[in-house]
Image (cartoon, rainbow, N blue to C red; front, side, top):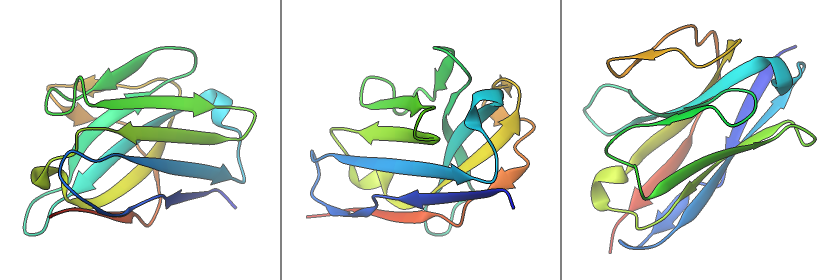
Length: 125
């Protein structure tokens, strides 16, 4: 059974850091693109970042210079390192998988067929 499980969320002060993990089971990440999404209270879910096999990746302009996406295929896990966090980064963060490579057009992510249940990130003093 294909499954994605996010972890690493929590409460952090503005300016702090968190590292989220997305662990896959039931399939091998080598052939999938993994996207990170977030949903703030009362807002629609939005894409944050995506990584394909190798070094191809995408970062939304709102997180460029602060977030980094990486993958460890040996551990079947994708990470989202979040630095210099802001209150507007608060939300539930989800990871999702798409066969092949990241396809992001005008901020819209395509092909994300498998989703985790999310992990809550709260940035507050």
